[in-house]
Length: 323
Image 1 (cartoon, rainbow, N blue to C red):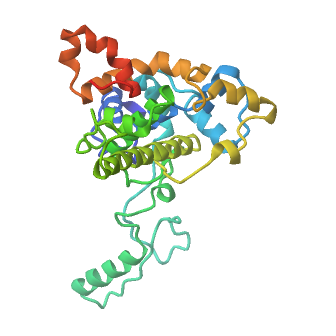
Image 2: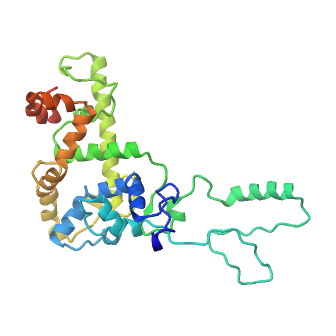
Image 3: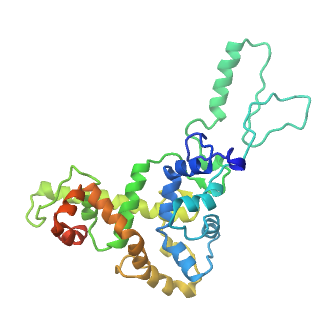
């Protein structure tokens, strides 16, 4: 990989790749892939790229520049052009050194530790005491990724689950395309809680136990959606996956105030399903969402054999018909 072969990435396991293609494949199965996918659901980046309006928020502008603006359709193309550098750790000399006490110019930095070890102790005592002191100052397995990483774009932490992030992505995409669909329907169609089987149950006539199941699935899916909203917003500021609650619509200045109405109308996700942003999303992502729903509900073979399923599918997705 020439100059890229020594690059390290906090979000990738090991460094076994020998070519740019191998690195790209590894990245496509990593947290960086989902960072890219969440950025592609960003109405702020979409609007900035479409209108060339300047982004006033410095953090968001920096992320916008490092990721090449609104990310391209191809992850591999985007990774090889932007991600491969934006997420790479800068080379550092992480090796054990013997400190020369006679040399006043010690080769160290803020992440290095210097221990004074008396030569009168035996090796067992030195090892025991050294470990005790090291545990006090070393980051260990629960280290702060952002504090230690020196990449341009840093992972927020390593406490993430790719399956959970993927589910959050699909819930968010579902809600953008079908904003009027209840959360419990989205949770059911995406099989977020298969044990809560609520199909063919008339909610108006159910007993209290069944009603609680509806509420449970509604709440469960709402949490996925809420977390996805936070992840999407924080990704813009260069922090991912970060679930810290935010309210960007009211608290953050992204574009000049004279563009507020235009931005709101073009990127609306709540009041309708036909804003320019939603139309763009449908054109590029609706088929993928539908295929995901078919796969999760094991509809593939039935759709190939029975045209009635295909005609009724959109109603099923919107929650007005059960299949």
